[in-house]
Length: 335
Image (cartoon, rainbow, N blue to C red; front, side, top):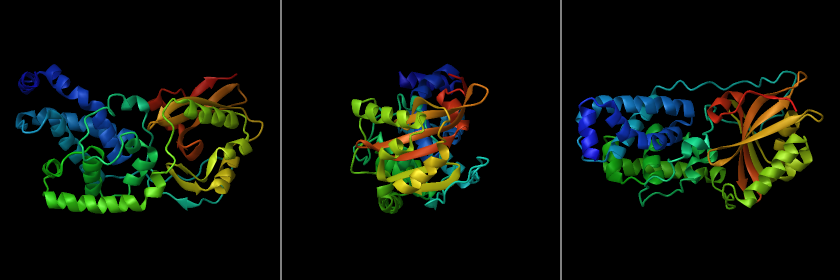
């Protein structure tokens, strides 16, 4: 069946080409997102990958599967994008009349964006090689993707292909036009770098299962505290080392007290807040709205929450520009 589709696609049958490639689109999007840290950039690269595959199908030797061949093209397209990248610059604090507290530190990966769970459908159940070191749910968390962004491009590609997707070293070497020893060397360096950041993305307390009563309980408490602007109740939900970031602003806060000072800036007593639930990177997420004097609730930000045990260990705030990708409106009727 695949051979027939390849023959028809080589003859110019666009529907046959789509039948070959469409089953892999979502997993390619997730792969490119891991490498680039941005859904928009990933979608652009996936489109470039499919265009290159269509043009290069005549050279497909069928020594590997269509899936592996597409991963080769996508990975190299990502590497090209990383080498030519003009990453968006850090953005200054822009809430008028409000001064943020002194940050704990400044982040580097200000281009990092959220990944809607709708794109994960069909992408996490893909075949993974036995040498993969990370669970699929762990490898799409915001903390893990953020940690990946500090790796040099070639090391980044090797680590994802080997430790996340489980491709053999020989397969990765062929994908990258490299030798097996160079792949193993790059992997060793990448693992060492990622291990040094381990506390930033891997915790002893595992998150509860998505949609479980345990997750629902912490989410319910979070929504109640936020919508009522109850800062004390919100802070009670945080771990001692809770971490807050807000791309594309570089400000980062770590620890209960710094995070509490930041949340006090966002939550103004007497103001009406609404949170609309969604999911990003396999984690609970919320579109945050504020009721205006005109009776309209306007979207201000998207929060992605990381849960460890029965506490919130991290929260990432994104601007409302990401709402469209999540199917969230920019405004809601007042209530």
